[in-house]
Amino acid sequence: MRQLTNKRILLGVTGSVAAYKAGELIRELRRAGAEVRVVLTRSAAEFVTPLTFQALSGHPVNAELLDAETEAGMGHIELARWADCILVAPASADFLARLAQGRADDLLTAVCLARGVPLAVTPAMNQKMWANAATQANLDAMRGRGVLIFGPDSGEQACGETGPGRMLEVPAITEAVSELFTTGSLQGRTVLVTAGPTREVIDPVRFLANHSSGKMGFSIAEAAQEAGARVILVSGPVNLPTPDRVERIDVISAEQMLAEVQERVVSADILVAAAAVADYRPVQVATEKIRKTHDRLQLELVRNPDILREVKRAHPRLFCLGFAAETEDLHAHARAKLIDKGIEMIAANRVGAAAEDAEGVFGSDTNALSLLWGEDCVELPLAPKAKLARQLIASLAQRFDDWSKRTNGRGDNIVTLPGNRN
Ligand code: C5P
Image (cartoon, rainbow, N blue to C red; front, top):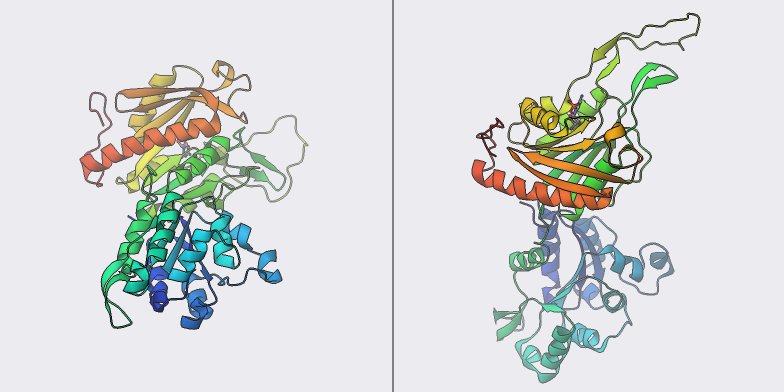
């Protein structure tokens, strides 16, 4: 499991001989799934070059507070906003003193002061500097303000002395940073979401489609991302902005959606099929606009592939949640679909005149769902789709955990027959 998937870490590097280890730290953090940006202090740049860190992080390195060019792009406020966590490694005695004073006279201290996210420092200095009452008082002051102090280790030092003050080793730092983010119920998982309608082309100016706005699927993608997952969103034509940090692939038709899902599902743990896929498409697409020369016109249609069913059949280890939009007998129809498609969970909602929302679900900002699995069911009453999506993801994460434990992630003893509980 990649513990830091999608996390943004701002790494501050200060003037210490341990600065050379920050290169390996960037690689470890990225290997764990994090995106890393680096801020160097002036004295750090005496030990290591910005170019090395630019190559390792994949981003330009920031160093100056009052650099017009940098401030116009990612200035100190943007960097503080961008980060999910600030890590200073190594943190020199001088940097800790300046941080304790609340100074903002260089880029790194200014970013630390402007932050609204956790700040962790990994001290690295000579053992006598570490033991000095001034350094210890600075650390106490910072602890009192919620700054996390990782390490230091004790042992042989670059100056030839032995004692406490060595920077923690890179794997231990990565582990400590990961622990800051272990609350997400889908941390380290990859969730693929389908959303929106599909369009099935009739001729160059017409298509078959439906009322789906994509709002439910997009809210689910956002909630899964918030729960720590890497999210891939395959969407039909909708008019919605992409949720932050979600990888979006746009498609038009059901066949395109199937192809994209098949390609991307190999890296996924969970599929949420929220798209309202057109059941049929025209047998033939007219190359020219169809003229209104007759009183009657017959369009021959052919069944589209059932994306959810096909993908689940090809990947039994994939945990699948489908949707069932029904006008009557909600639970019975939804349960039949759960069994028929061989999936683990289904979210059922009333549509049309039976819908609880006056706007009838499609395009509306609210919805109500019944979540069914095995013989169990939970009702999620009428609520804004964003709230509903968070409840749905919380429930899905629980079911997914139970399912993974029971099947050891193999998904091979799941039989969704009546009386056979998941
Ligand atoms: O059978 P029905 O269309 O009611 O099933 C709805 C569920 O199946 C939804 O989760 C929908 O996204 C999915 N589906 C699909 N491909 C289709 C039709 C439906 O993935 N062609």
